[in-house]
Image 1: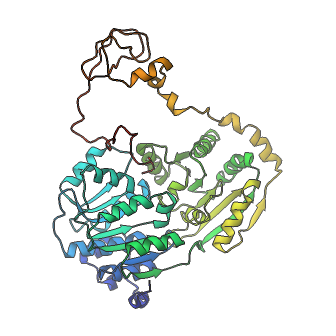
Image 2: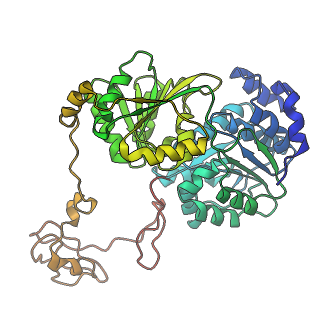
Image 3: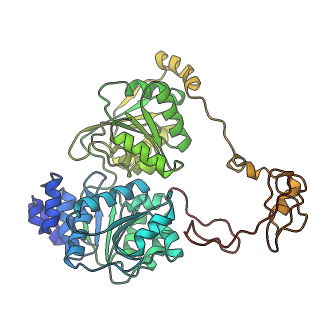
Length: 492
C-alpha cells in the first residue's frame, strides 16, 4: 500500500467549500457550524469522491465519520437511483450499537437536504421494524455484523446492490471477534465496489484484513499507532483495589468534573461502581453489553442531557460514545489490551478541546501499566494514595453502600427450568397420552399427535397443544438440526 500523492496535496484545503462537495452537503455543514475540515477529512474526502479504495488510520475523535460520510453522500446523490428491494447502495459495518446509531445520525444530519434514506441494523431490538425499513430498499445501511448476518440468513436483506463498503473501527472489530462474520459478509458483496477501511490503530492483523478487502488503496495516516491526544492531561494513581470506589467518589465530588466517563473491565464491576456512586449521592448510570438496548439508550440520553454526571462503561463503549464536553475520563481498572487505553481516554478532549484522564492502578495491574506505557511510548505521571487513612475508613463502609450481588445461575433464574430430574427426558419428547406434565406430578393431559405436553407447575389436567409453525414476523435466526440458537452475541 502506498500513500497517494493527491492525499499529500490536500494540506492546502482549508475550507469545506474547497472540497467540491455538493451544495446540499455544504448547506448542512453550515447549519451545523462546520467550516474547516480536520486533517483526516481534508485528505480522505477527495480520494473517496474519486472512487479510490482507502485505508484511513486516525485516532478517535479526529472526525473519521465525516471523512467517509460526506463523500459517500456526494457520490450517491450525484448518481441518484433507487436502492434494490431488501438491499442498499452503501453498507457501513460498525462494532457496537451505539457507534452504529451515531454514524447513522451523522449520515442523516449531513444528508438532510438530499432526500437519501438511512437505516440502522443491530441487535437487542425487534426484527420487524428493521425488516420493514429494508423492504423497499435503503440508500445507506449502518449495521453491526451479527444482526446483519441474521438478516442475510433469513433473506430479509441481500448485498447485491452494494456500491460502497465501509469497515469502521476495524481494530475493535477484531478485538470483539468479528473477523469471521466480516469475511462472510465481504464474500457476498459485489466484486465491483469501493472499499473504505478505517482504524485507529494498525496491528498486523488489520494489515492482513485490509490486504484482503482493499484494491490498490490510497492510505491516509494522521497519527502513528497508539498515540494519545496531546491535549489530554494524563495521570495515574496507585491505590489498593478495595479503595478504588471511595477514591473515585472523592474525585467526582470535585466541581471541575463536569461530565465524566468511568471505564471498568467487567459488566458486573460497572454495575457495582454505579450503585456505589448513586448511594454516595453522585448521579451515575452504567452501560454495557448485558443491558437491554432501551436501558443503554436511556443511560446515554441522560448522560448527554447532563442528568448523569458519571457514565460507567465497559470497553464496548470506548469508541461508541461521542458526547461533547466530556471533561474527565477515569480508568477505574486498566484495560487488558494496551490500545484500549488510547480509545478510552479519547472520549475527552474532542473537537479541539482539552480534557483530563485519570487512571487507577492496583498492585496486580502493574504489568498492564507497563504494556500501556510501552504501546503509547510515554511515561504517565503517577501519584501514590496507598495507605490513605481517609480512603481506608470509606472503604470499610463501601460494601454496605453497594454490597456484592449474589450470583444467580441464569439457568435457574427462570422457574420453568426447575424441572425434576426424572422428568427432564420426558419434557423434550413428543407428547403421549397420559404423559407427565413438566414441573409436577402426573397430569392426565391428552397430547395431540406429534405434540408436546406443555402442562407446567404440577397437578392439573393440562392438555398439550402443538404450536403452529412460526409465521409472520421473523423473531430471530432459525435453528438448524435442533442445534442451539445460532444468534450472535448480544453485544451486537
